[in-house]
Amino acid sequence: MSILAVLEQRGGAWNRMSFETLAAAQQIAGELNTTASAAVLGQGIDALANELAGKQLEKAYAVEHDLLKDYTPDAYTSALRQLIAHARPDIVLFPHTYQVRDFLPKLATSLGKVAVSDVISHRADAGALVLVRQLFQGKVNADVRFAGEGPNFASLQAGAWRADQLAAGSAPVEKFAPQLSPGDIRTKPLDLFRESQRAVDLGAAEIIVSVGRGIKEADNIPLVETLAKALGAELAASRPICDAGWLPMERQVGSSGQTVAPKLYMAVGISGAIQHLVGMKGSRVVVAINKDANAPIFEVADYGIVGDLFQIVPELTAEIEKRKRS
Amino acid sequence: MKIIVSIKQVPARDSQLRIAPTGKWIEDSDLAYEINEPDAYALEAGLQLKEKNGGEVVALCAGPARAAQTIREALAKGADRAIHVEEDIGALDPLSAARLLAAAARTESPDLVLTGLQSDDLGYGQTGVIMAELLGLPHATIIMEVEANDGGIRVKRELEDGWFQHVEMPLPALLTIQSGISKLRYATLMGIKKAKSKEIRRLSASDLKVESSPASIVLERLHLPERTKRTQLFEGSPKEAAAQLVEKLQFEARVI
Image 1: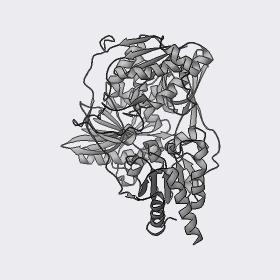
Image 2 (image 1 turned 30 degrees about the vertical axis):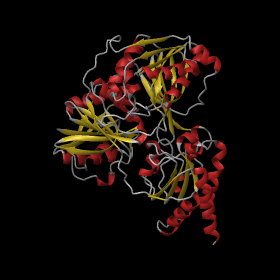
Image 3 (image 1 turned 180 degrees about the horizontal axis):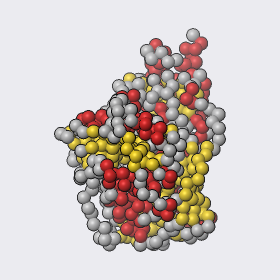
Image 4 (image 1 turned 135 degrees about the vertical axis):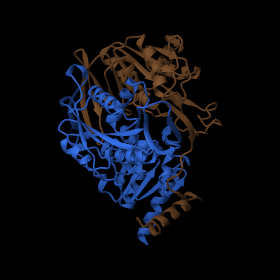
């Protein structure tokens, strides 16, 4: 039994979820009485590999090739298959990033396996690993086990393991050069770009009032806007609101928008799909106002009101205004 | 361009879910169902591509008899015909489900296969990419735009933190479509009428010669999430609840 954490970098900078996965690999290895190794893929990654050499690991693999400079699912899958055949890990862990979502199902399928994606927690049960993942938009959790021999695969949700629990140590770096040829790569990645400068930095806001599908129509947005104003808060939204064009994209909180950690986050009519929660669960105090008492947002809320936001929000605004005057 | 759009029927978004006594799945006898929302965007993307470039849109759906409702809706919105793989894929692992879908897609030799980026029920977010691997197609995920360009396509992929990337690839290919990229159309009365005469090809796993093989992962037990925090809930009239909340925010949490 051995564990391999495959980390993510772009242009020589770590994806911030990489060290969460590394910490998880160390922790799980400890519980299963085995060792963890780590791998990083790319081109010109010596500095990153040397950083891994300072962690408590069996080995740090630097998987280096010119064709790994820019990510493609074909090159990554091929390189990882070769690494897995060489290192023979039983369990391979990944951060659940957009890039991993793009190639991990392909890698697992090519080996006749199914990856357990977007895992939120784990436990060791008599020497075997039980993984927990969410179903039905977070309304139900499921315990999942691997049924067969390794290699088995899982990707770990952002924020579910803590990078600050990473153990230092020393690990030998092993360079691994996969056989890749340009003819094997069917997609051609072009440059990365951003659409516009962000005018709103939600990351700097002390208080955020955020609105979701429960608001029903664009015409109702001023209701929460007034509440935000009373609190001196920035107005934000979950993805569907920005997709519908009711608020600009730059006000979106979640995996595809901004990650925020204000001292107060008030979620109004937001059910709390995981894509939203990963963007705000670091907030110090979370308030949820939602008609569905079972909405996942209440799992991260410190305070909540179950009820009709159209009745509650105006009362809340009035109460805040009243206290400001007194 | 022959486009297959793979769609799934899932429990309606606001369903109150109960875990079945077996603990392996939910009580699904009395649920309302609807199209998986991300797949509705894949269908919309397929219909728009056909309107722009010509061709045909074939809706592909695996599910029990009730999935016929979702298929009819796709036909009413403008899909030309449909394939219904009549198998209950409820708690099936994504590889087993994708084997059925890929086998059905293979019979059509499509130029492009589209699907939503994940399902609202199991949420593995893998079916599309697994299908691509089984069909031997190049793929890209979380796609915002698709343009045809001499013999291939150029797509806009969404990355994290507001980044995007263009990717070019040859056809045939498979794409998973990001939700919310365009406004979903409604079925027109004419569309609903026309849908009744459109072809729905019904296939079973044995028609497709897909044998079930043991999955490499096992869904062992469903359970309700444990609260990580104890939420203080405020009751009473909206006015009373609001007053209590503000009181706590001011004097207990001290955040306002």
